[in-house]
Image 1 (cartoon, rainbow, N blue to C red):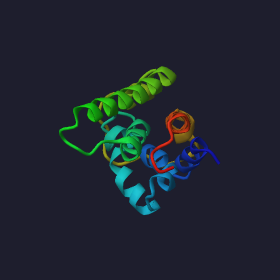
Image 2 (cartoon, rainbow, N blue to C red; image 1 turned 90 degrees about the vertical axis):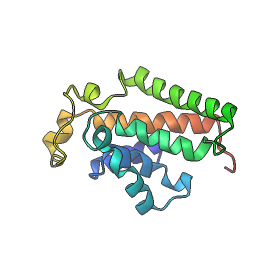
Image 3 (cartoon, helix red, strand yellow; image 1 turned 30 degrees about the vertical axis):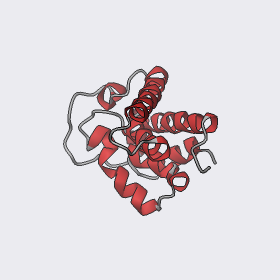
Image 4 (cartoon, rainbow, N blue to C red; image 1 turned 135 degrees about the vertical axis):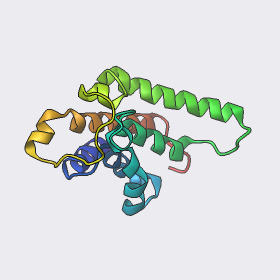
Amino acid sequence: MTHEEKAVENFLAGYNCAQSVFLAFAEDLGLTEDFALRLASSFGGGMGRLREVCGGVSAILMAAGLLYGYTAPDDDQAKAEHYALVQALAEEFRRENGSIICRELLGREGPEAPVPEKRTAAYYAQRPCARLVGSAAAILERYMAAHPPAGQ
């Protein structure tokens, strides 16, 4: 199963957008399922239903940090290279989907009540989120195939 398929399956199982994508990469990242789900839990709904950056985008950027990130605070070159990767991944998502902002992707206004909506057939029919989490996962999967992380 591809990361894209896993992310979509996770979303349809009820995980939020960020959890769905990040969980799809948990094994690659050497993370337990519980840890991955907890770490990504705050980023669903564009950061806790604030409708800011899409949770799928946040998830691939968190994963990219674990796979390709830098650690030395004074390594300006590594920082610049990593930020270039972040911008490239975000731009690819924007090209494929029109935006990286949750409220723009959903055609909604700003922050919403923190209580999530029930996952029903109508919920899934009204949202492009399953497609969006698949898109996010596919973007990182393609990058990883072209640029295998160190140690893999």
